[in-house]
View 1 (tube, rainbow, N blue to C red):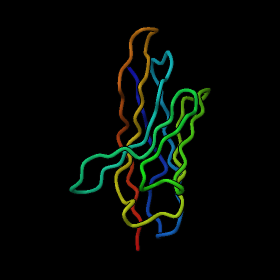
View 2: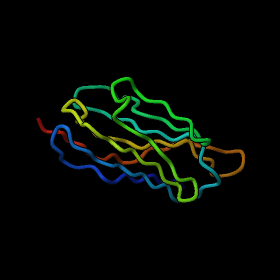
View 3: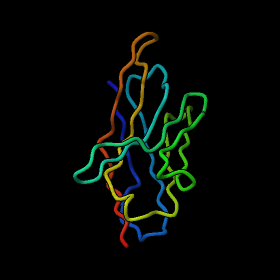
View 4: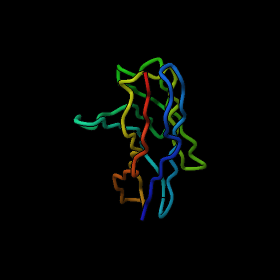
Length: 120
């Protein structure tokens, strides 16, 4: 089985920064694209940022210029550096990964989520 575990969430003042990390473990052959999603109370889960196996990135318009996604393939980790945080960034942030657990078999996996609260 494959597990994704997030860390780094917490409470921060508007304008501050947080760095989220996600570590993948278990039966991993390789990891394709990875991403971060978030879900605020009463809202649908939305894509925040994605990064391909080759390092190409894409961001939601609401976080462009403020958030940076990165990955370390050797360590099977993906990170999200969040700067200039706003109250509207408050949400539970989820790590997502498309993971091959064998050469020709893959699954879409989710972490348990980590709470980010930005106070204004």
